[in-house]
Amino acid sequence: MNKPLRRIAIFCGLLVLTLLIRDNWLQYVQADELKEDEHNRRVAIERYATPRGDIIVDGKAITGHATTEGDFKYKRTYKDGAMWAPVTGYVSQAFGATQLESIDDGILTGNDDRLFFRNTLDMITGKKREGGNVVTTLNSAAQKAAYDGLKKQGAKGAVVAIEPSTGKILSMASYPSYDPTAFAGSDTAAGEAWNRLQKKNNPDDPMLNRALREVYPPGSTFKVVTAAAALEHGKYDSADEKTDSPLPWTMPGTTTELKNEGNIPCENATLREALRVSCNTVFGKLGYDLGNDEMLETAKKFGFTEEQFVPVRSSASVFSDNMNDSQVALSSIGQYNTAATPLQMAMVSSAIANNGTLMKPYMVDELQAPNLDTIEKTDPEEMSKPLSADNAQILQSMMETVVEDGTGTNAKIDGVKVGGKTGTAQHGENNSANPYAWFISYAKADDGSSPVAVAVVIEDENAVRDDISGGGLAAPIAKNVMEAVIDSKK
Image (cartoon, rainbow, N blue to C red; front, side, top):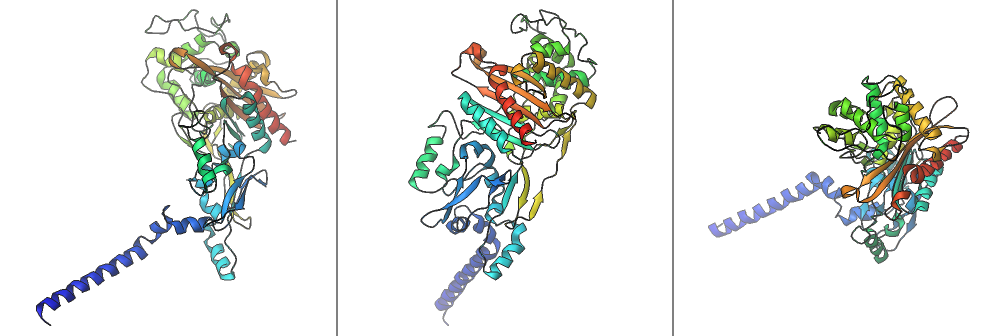
């Protein structure tokens, strides 16, 4: 062989070797990555080739499926989609998936590794692959009460209800909402529905899960955290001991007096009376007396400063460090830089109702195989102890006074002991926008246990400013949710 031919042969051999290396790299090294690539159409075709499993509430599916034309055979459908969207999220042939639909996609499609042996057996027997189910902790009656209450109010807002003894989420509603069925497919109508829901086209932002992802100034509902800090750090030993609370009280380092709403009896008021009428001066000075470190320590025990996963991610609620004295005072009444999700404030109420023990919140009870065998079961888990049982019971008695004879009387339920706290949180630069209306609460059973704790927030941009209050707007919704849970247990 002459020299030029030898060079050509060597070059061709190198090309063949390169192709072999590349082929083996694709087949053995990148196989899993390519298989799971969202741009691999074969993956998408396989994903929608069979019906998804269902998301279950109270033993019934709140999801379904429908056939479609084209490469994708099935698409997801939802029952009362707008009501359940904050729980389910969505799955769309065109726009992907979120929340439970995304987190538990492997179970719902039947592709989870834990279904390997079942899928292998089905393949041998010729049976089509099926998806498993996600069984939630949600209570359908409570969810309906929450969503209907928000819808009737006609304002943006959210509700979260928790079972204090376990951490099970019983309700998680957000308004305005959206129906995921509208864009579950990949046709023109789905694209148009999707575009209508985007924030740039819809300033109400209906796809925002306000229960988990929006943080609001909690206003006076945060005063129960400040009261818990005062009890836990030994500032006061009972609900009926007079506090050291002068009136007027000038915030330290400033010439600004902290104001109370209306002519209420706040000078040296007891903790019970201060919570009943919602004294800013008492709780602002309490926060100052405790200091930033002790206030932050207590807030963290309730869950502030950390993201929560239920398993959907919830934004971290805020209580800052390195604040000056007046900033600590304002933060201790739920203003300045204090901010909380509705989930967080439901956790606060839940811990108090559960005699000081905060259970980790969750909304997936179990994952099921297609034959309904349990693949994974969620066990209740203690998260922290923000306050002792004795101090929790003191705080319960204070919150019950708020409902019996204070700002929270709209949450009263005949024959049921209810504790609560209202809040009207300043909003906008120099408090220029309408405030947020809050209410947190719990109900007690005859044996002293609590079946439900609730947080409600309303942001009504169109209401008359003087008509906005936690007791007026939010408490009736909380009452309806608590009643729904109590009635479902009868």
